[in-house]
Length: 234
Image 1 (cartoon, rainbow, N blue to C red):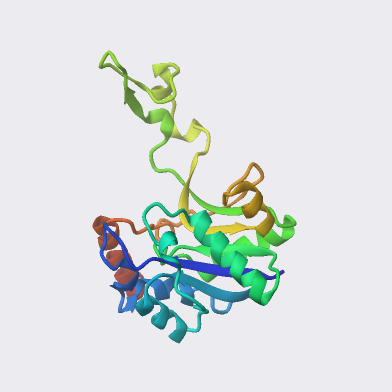
Image 2 (cartoon, rainbow, N blue to C red):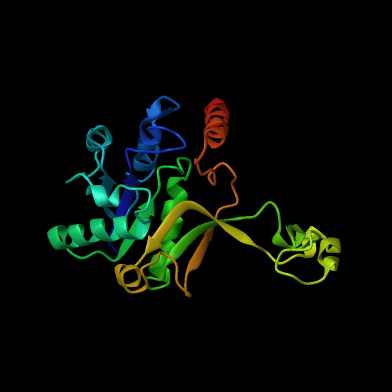
């Protein structure tokens, strides 16, 4: 199985300026994702897609492949992750040969482990190349959430009886959220569906709240710093 790991890292970030270069535990955020997969069997290359030369230089020094800077049209807020991934995949396969899977790793999930990556590749391989998505159990179940109706009264999300609120948490159906840590997709699926998820996607379930941290705001960053410090002290 030949897997291309793709780390996407724009230079611009509105909520946290220069987020991918900001240091977490003494190292730029981007490095945490690269170092987590250096020794994973099956990964043929770690390709970084960035529009920022400083990010590129750091990643090259860390052993990643950065053959170009991402086109400006793919470095805007409107550019989708799928478009960025297809640009990288098309280049790699034209220059280096076909791959069996594309592993997208977002730098905003710095605490994913090597073991979780290995497990996702195992699921992908044993399923014959079905897409794999990292998910985590939700804290707040949708059955216990409310929306506000036009008349101003509260009602359960999705409709149904208010009796849903009386169901004990242990009896509710399991619900998961996408945590952003791992997306593993076959090139054919990505090109045909234009998505990392299809109707046959398999989960890699990550129960660890530490691994599931997705840094999007300064609040998230503060939590990440606390968690990193605590884990270093163990």
